[in-house]
Image 1 (cartoon, rainbow, N blue to C red):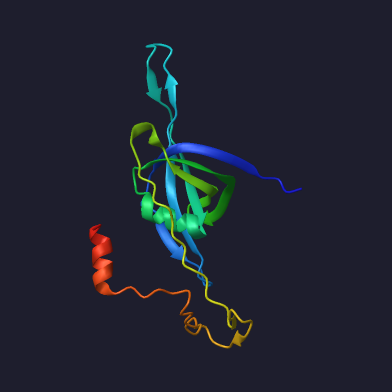
Image 2 (tube, rainbow, N blue to C red):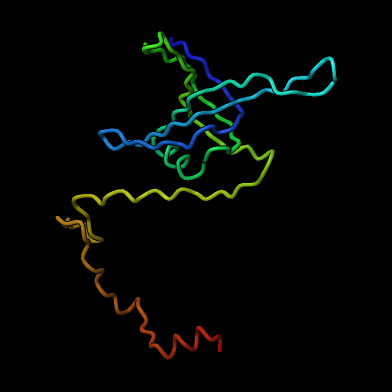
Length: 168
């Protein structure tokens, strides 16, 4: 069993997302996410901002492309993913950062609206060999024109098309 911590964080994007591409062509994006909880002040009875928690968010592949297109500094978001602590040694000593390897990033609609646009993926490359309607194999990526079946097709001239389009 692998131990992992899944987390959901609501906050604002604190830096412009930075897009990178790996050597094998996979996209990934990183951005900083700040989350400031609002807590009640017992003395005044009003809410105040508590300390801001900061995360580095990493997203991969199609989600990375969508984030790069849709999310900008200041955007309110909700991020879900696996969290871990990244540590390294700098001149000033040991440093650490909370990192969320995100599997979902959504714009938080509590303060605004959004317009969803479905991602259109590129079509896969055609197979190296195609099979025709009669079962024959074509050793090319371009299929020959379909044989004309005169009985099944009806010729329509341009004047007739214009009449049909005009509805008369």
